[in-house]
Length: 370
Image 1 (cartoon, rainbow, N blue to C red):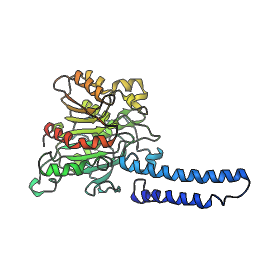
Image 2: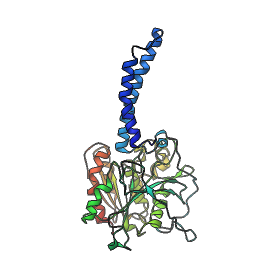
Image 3: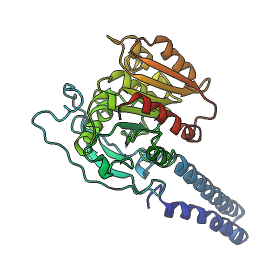
Image 4: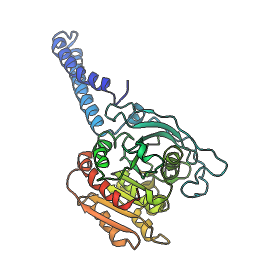
C-alpha cells in the first residue's frame, strides 16, 4: 500500500477508533498474574497511542509531502547507479554528445492523489550522473494550443526541501493550480515546470545537491541530466535566458548554488528560506566535509567566481531563517549579478512558501525570455 495514497490514510484513521475499542473491551479481560495483566494492559494503551501517532504522521506527511515512498521513509532506497566522474560540460544542449541519441521518455500519471492529473511523470536514468529517479513535468495551457505550435517555452526547475518529494511542488505547494489561471490571463509567462527527485541516497542523507566523489553526482543530475531530458522531450530553448531554478529550504540552498555555479544554464533562481553555509542542513554531505562545506557555500562561490555570474537571485526569508544569508549575498554581488532579498514572516513550512508562488513567478516572468 502506497505511503501517500488515500487508502493508507483512511486505514490509519480507522485504526484509531478500533484500537480504542479494543482497549476498552479487552481491559478487564486480560488475565493471568498481576504482572502479566499490567503488561497486557500497557500493550493495549501503547497500541492505541501508536495508531494515533501514525495517523497524525501520515496526515502531516501528506500535507507537506516529505516522504513519497516507504523506501524514502526508512532510508532504504538508493537512486545512485554509478558515481563515475562526469564528462566535461559541453554546455546547454550538449549533454548527449555528438554520438549520443536523444533520450525519449515514457510518461504516465503521477500516483499521488494530491498531484493534479495533468502532471506527468517519468523515470529517468541519468546518463552523465549515474542517478536514476522520477521527474515530474507540467506543461502550461498554451503548450498544446495550435496557436503556439512550434513555439518554445521557458523552463523552471523546482527543488523540494530535505526530506522532500518531487511531488511536493505540485501537491502541497499547488504550483500548477495557482499558475494556470495566471498564465491563461497573461500575468505570468507560460513556463514548463519540472520537479526532479532530490532524495538520492540511503540513510536519510542530504546530498547538498553536489557532486561528491565516490558518493553521488547530484549536481550533474540536477544541472545536466534533468535539463537535457527536458530538451530531448519538450519544445524548449537551451539558452540560459529561458531557464530558472527555484526551491525552498534545502532546495533553496540548492537553487542558489546551482544558478551561481551554472550561469550558462540558469539565468535566474528563487530561494525561499534558504541558507549559504551547508551546515544549515546537518545531514548534508557537503556539511560533513570541510572543503565541500567551504566551496559549496553560495557566498563563497559568488565571491570567488572568476567573473560575476550573469544571474538574478530572488531570496526570501525571515530573520534567523534565510534573510541574513540573502543580505550577505546582496552585499557581495557585483554586476551583472543581481540579488533581491525579501523579508518574510511565518514558520519554516510550505504554508509560508505556498502563497509566495504568484509573486515569485511574476518576478521570473520579468527575468526570463518567454
